[in-house]
Length: 315
Image 1: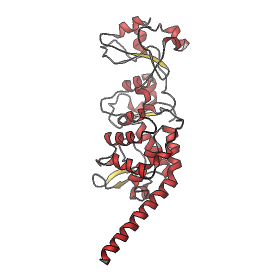
Image 2 (image 1 turned 90 degrees about the vertical axis):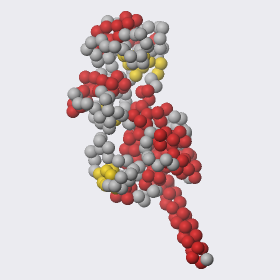
Image 3 (image 1 turned 135 degrees about the vertical axis):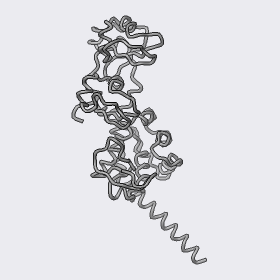
Image 4 (image 1 turned 45 degrees about the vertical axis):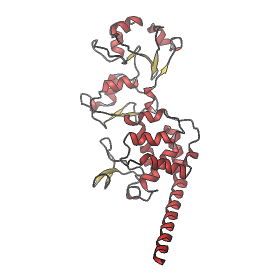
């Protein structure tokens, strides 16, 4: 009987100690999580919950020896220090950071620059349940209970209190999937002078450049004609040497694209094999020749999942 009582007391003590460590972790890193939320739009509650879970409240080997609080593995685009640690398999490669701050920043960038997490940035800032389930669905972790564990931590420690509305300082780059509709009369003057925009369809804008989505039965020639452009102009705007078959839903730019992506959209991590530099140039409203200059080592190379493509100078 005494032995059972001793075990129960030890268990209660252990649980209490764990909670104290977690509360200390929250106190120490909540400001950092909020700072990242302002920078990228990722809820602070999610960042903190992932940090607690992935690093065992800062006590894991990865966190202590490598400042890696989010269990981020090396992947193809990492050129920093590494360490080996057992995870799903033995001695897997993990990233090592010079500081915890660097780990938090890389975690934010890891989510916002990878294609598989793009839908998360369409969620409401306080939808921590949607973020938790979305992270699990996107494959952040293999644990089938991962989303429930994150939600449990957020609610147990009231981490959602850190998710107060904030002004995001830098636009999450994956908002490119929802370009804004621009009424023809509001398109910039220089575009109006060079392009006679059709009034019968929605005109969108990406990186400040107007474009349309093609519909069934259209061609580059018909779009050029409808918008007062020469065919060769339209092809040049879309980085094409000659006219090709146009699939419905294709982005077709009606003016010259920019030399760099929008501010805050610094780089892109290829989400799947087969994606080309032109695909990325179209997606971000950047000229293909400019993209090649930013990424000289990638010109003529077949892109693979995990490759990093620079979208702005000096980043």
